[in-house]
Image (cartoon, rainbow over all chains, first blue to last red; front, side):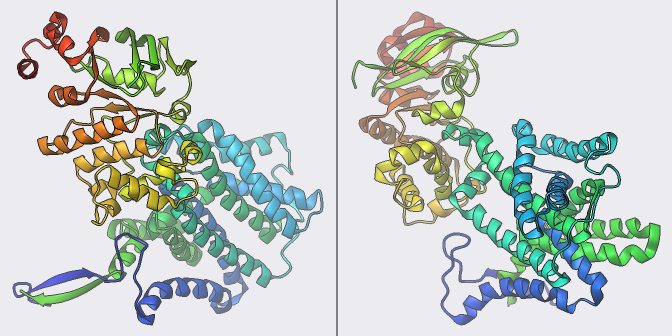
Length: 338
Length: 262
């Protein structure tokens, strides 16, 4: 150990940041790579993932992981950039999934059409249903969004519509498993970088302003409900996209699409990865989903170990991996003599 | 300053349950003037502003703006017509840098329509326009201040930021809710010329204020509220000579001081 009486630790920001966050003065290839390398690692890593995992079972896990990642990005965006804590992951998945399944099995649309249609129409439906509770904030909004998937699942079950408890079977699959995997991976990457760009655009600043201080936004002559609705549309579109992909992956659609897993796991992933970073939730999914699969060997004890791991992350890295990593990455650290 | 009325409040009444916060308050604001609203704590000044700007609904009465009824409209529509306000408790967007705080009003429909401040907004780059406005309002352009996250700024700058957010909309009227409170004497001294300059630019200003001496430097007329009732209205000298006002402020050191000063 270093003698702390003679030495102290000095932390310095790297000298490439000027004035504000996100504005850099890059003077060399080294500094350029310093910024691009982490992004490249993520992109290349995600693209290589289906090739390096062992066997088809784990390839399936990768695709499911990507669905969860879409939901986690959607949650992070709504919660930390618009201030709407949404537990509606299951609702979005269900809406997108059922729409895609109906379009495919009843009207015979191919997946290339059902997915975009289900995404847009599903997002519109979700936004319309959530419209009355947009004035709600924080935990109250969360409760209402949690209610929708429960209610819809029960309605489908009780009225025996849309296949009832059996669900809709015989949904077309993707052309082959490579198309399937790379389609969802591409969507995750597009969603990630797209949303990151969006929150720094002017309209993204309005979203963040609505979260910080909605009264001040009203005082600027802007209708906050309108901007919240746009944000919910974007967030639910990501979820519906995931749902639409999911039914084509499972080749089946049923009320298990409204399972609470889709609402809860994205939140856990966001907490682990670092809230408000957008990359963090994806990272969280990359950790949580495989762990959850590995723990299947423990049978019923699975959830216990799962909880322990979650607790460990929350206690020891409560700020989130990505926030911690970013801070360390942007700073030099050295011992200097007192 | 003209004699033309820009804003007219008729019998504004607001009750919260059994408490009457405002009771039949009527007054007019003339084009281009600075109107001060004073009164002891709890006399309904902020409630009055909230009623005019639509942040709370009046129980009775109406507000006319340029001959059109605006009471009952929602807050963002009233702001869109050019009636802007500052908040007593500053409401910056804490997570955004100071200059990004102004992107929001510059993105608003009104700013897009009016071309923002001094010809920017619609065509100009919003970042540049917002730094221009901040400089106008007293942020040092070449320092780090405009680029700092709002939560790290001192009160003086946040008060200016509140005003800047109004200015970005190119307002007709600014309703200032205690812009001087919480500031040091020197900070107030630098704010007073700013208010005067806004008036010269043709903006009508309604100021709620507790710092009477500074208010009387800029105000053309003053209105006094007490327990939600309008006591008097007139020039600063008239108002301070009024017996009812003395009673409302009974024992207040500052009124004595101001009266001696006047």
